[in-house]
Length: 75
Image (tube, rainbow, N blue to C red; front, top):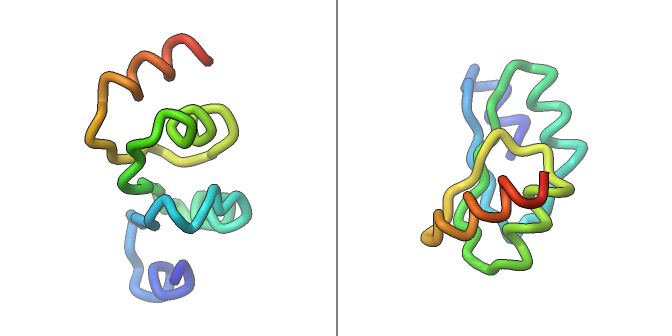
């Protein structure tokens, strides 16, 4: 999937959250100047994990209040 993003010259990539943190793929995307936005994180535990351990440039959630709270209290 990431290789298709690179080959097409995309500047953004949106992998679904169920694929995991994708640490090496996100690192490779960043090295290519590609922003990575994961979707759709709704479970509180996953939101925390992605904030603390992930390297995403952002993610989409149906519960932005959880995201904001965890972002500012966990960082």
